[in-house]
Length: 171
Image (cartoon, rainbow, N blue to C red; front, side, top):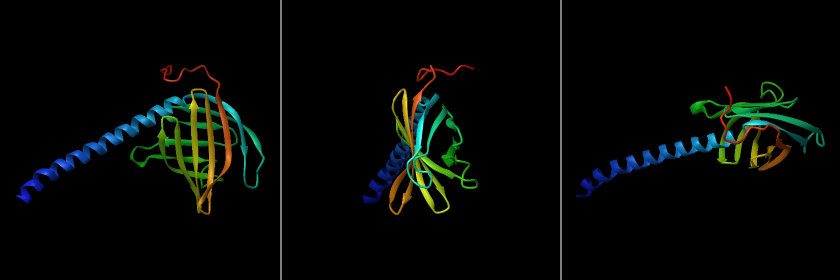
C-alpha cells in the first residue's frame, strides 16, 4: 500500500514542483521586463565618488535606458545585457580587462530595484539601481571590504525626456 501511495504522490509532486519552477521563472522575467521598461528614456544627474583615492570627485552622469538594459555616457560607463540563461553580463568602466569591473550577474529584486554583481580579481561588489518613482533613479556602486559593502560611487538621476513610462518606442 505504501508503494502505491508513493507511486501516485511522487509524480504529482514532480509536476507541482516543475510547474512552480516555471511559474517562478515567468514571474521573474515579467518583473525584469517591468523594471527595465520603467527606466527607459534619458536621465541626467549629479554623481560623486564617496570613498577611495578619488573621494569627493563630483561628476554629471547621462544615462540612456532601454528595455534591453542601458548605457551610461560620460567618462564613467557601464554596459549591461541580459544573455539568456547566462543572466546579466557586462562591464563597468571597461571591465576587469581594462580599468574597471566585470558585471557577472544580477537580479531584479522588485519593480523598482535591480542589483548587479561586479568583480575584478579579488574585488567584489554590487551596482544597484533604485527607481522610487517615474522620474528619479539612484545608482550606487559598493565594494566589499571585509564582510561589509562600502558605497564608493553614488548618482542621483532625473528623467529628462518626455517619454511616458510604459509607452511604445517609435520605430
